[in-house]
Image 1 (spheres, rainbow, N blue to C red):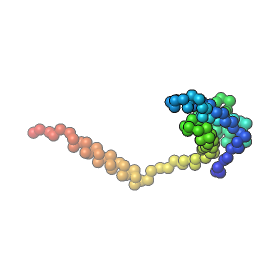
Image 2: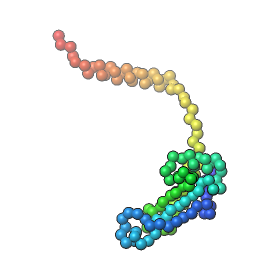
Image 3: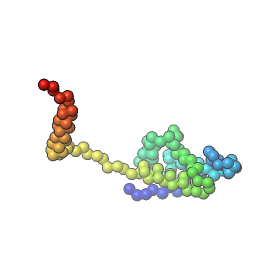
Image 4: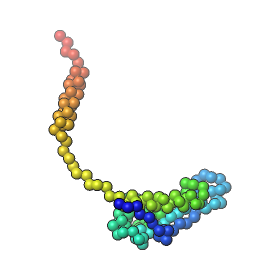
Length: 134
């Protein structure tokens, strides 16, 4: 599958105040970023929209809007880059299709080796028993 790039017009970035410790800077500066991406209104294929909407992700609301909060960095620009990168990572991960697994039977040799090791282990455990007194 190819890597999908989402145009800037399809998501909105909002600056908010970051949470947590940080002193005066955190109380005055809106350095955290909220990214909102409406999956249903996007230009993605219907197949990919359905895959995204069926993800078990708490960041996707019931309306089909993906909300990411980026507050890892001190600057707004770095948090914007982080939020957009995370959006692209989520969409590209949903675009990957894992190959179907076909069940196979163990080989005759591997089954024989497994049973021999079980028998040997059982014999070792039998030897741990009490010695009969005469």
